[in-house]
Image 1 (cartoon, rainbow, N blue to C red):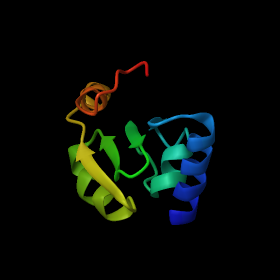
Image 2 (image 1 turned 45 degrees about the vertical axis):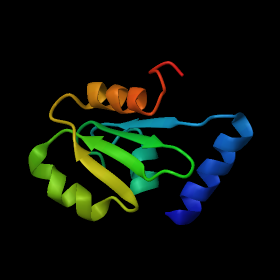
Image 3 (image 1 turned 90 degrees about the vertical axis):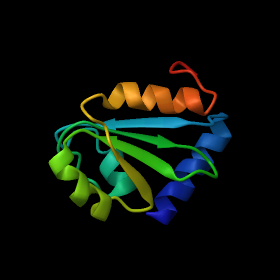
Image 4 (image 1 turned 120 degrees about the vertical axis):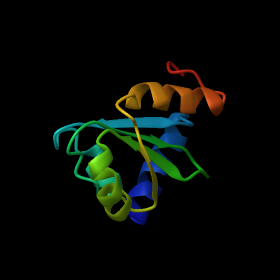
Length: 100
């Protein structure tokens, strides 16, 4: 996972991207699983930024304990069925807009 994150961060740097968002749902959109190890049973949103711990918002509270165990090097947060709104609020707190 560390090698994958390093490769992703290198591509982000080359492209001038300071925050990357990944989305997965129902085991589709394999980026989330590829980067974190969490198989995205239902919506999962990940924020990747250089020098910061990656953060994942996932929707089902009963999946949260397992997601915290499986998602490597990732701070897992319960999305409270508002995952995308929480992700946008997180980006705004970092000084980013949802369209940046």
